[in-house]
Length: 60
Image 1 (spheres, helix red, strand yellow):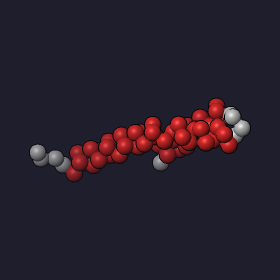
Image 2 (cartoon, helix red, strand yellow; image 1 turned 90 degrees about the horizontal axis):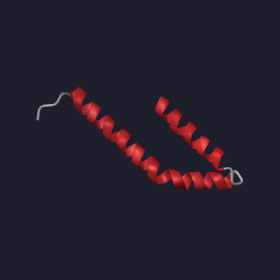
Image 3 (cartoon, rainbow, N blue to C red; image 1 turned 60 degrees about the vertical axis):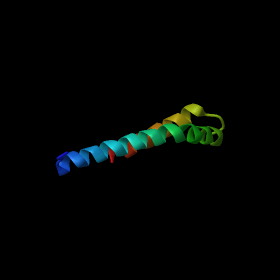
């Protein structure tokens, strides 16, 4: 298979995004629970903080 450097970079980026999404799905409930406990049971605040962190990382 003859691929260009650009195609290889795209494939690598796609794999990294997929891996990040899978990692987010597996660790998110743990982080959400910890933040909910930390913020006196405020699950909505915990979810909002997590969403903001993910959005900030995606913007980089």
